[in-house]
Length: 356
Image 1 (cartoon, helix red, strand yellow):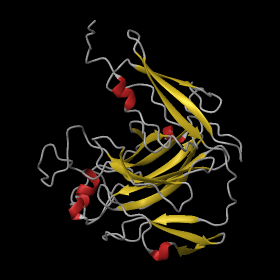
Image 2 (image 1 turned 90 degrees about the horizontal axis):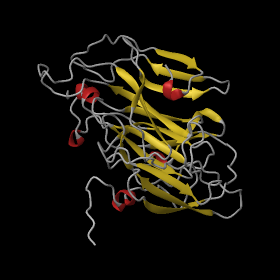
Image 3 (image 1 turned 180 degrees about the horizontal axis):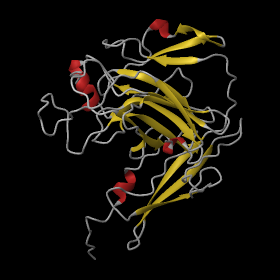
Image 4 (image 1 turned 90 degrees about the vertical axis):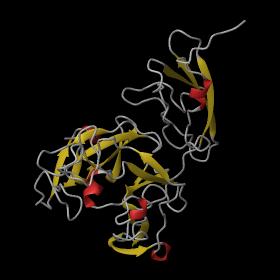
């Protein structure tokens, strides 16, 4: 018997392309995709062999993949997750993903602060990831780690990083480090000038992860900004318990579709005049799979450079941001005045991904 195969029908290779990061060392919520972007209308249905350990159904606004780890000092649990493609007209195609959920651990008591930074601008070695620790519980006294040398060196994108930040999972089991992909004066890696840095720079962020702040994963070079973005600066992240995921946010100058950086200021499709920054955001559980970027906030006539959002423990989110349009020096043509270096602060009870 012969069976005709329709190229528009998904096959097992689409399921084979699904990857669950750290499947043998699960410590937090999992990203379980629910659709195939290349096949509209084809859904992915998940079944968990232990839904009490790894959920397979949404809970309100929290997607499936919620992980409840075994108690401290107990054994790891193997959970079999089965993904089936369903389009309503064909026999489902299924694949099983075994994952190992590690037991909970007792998190050590805090003893000091940790800081990450880049050392200096206009220097390839200075634009890497450095660490320091506080002297006891004193946030004004610091000691550089690694004898003052860079702890992590970028080998992707522009081969330089700035504005690094470390975020910790709510349960304290893992750390993620996310810096800007930028190398000022790194002409070998694409640097042109500060006009370019705001209208044609990287749309990526860099990612490292660690369980102990000492041993770090391989670097990941992750595309997060849309084509209309002129750069992706100062990424930060905050956990949103309402959706069970991190909200990653950053500054991008946004331009009309079809435009591009050009040194020719008369280019009709060039990105002149330069625009002010907006705060964009994406959501993720694993810093591997990111949702499409959306605008969190933009202020007409004001900048939104390098925002920080923190919960204050009193039901509010506090947002602090620099009221700057410019991100550099010697900008030749700017659409808005850039005479403010002020910081402004605002608070909201709205979740950070929709804060205004």
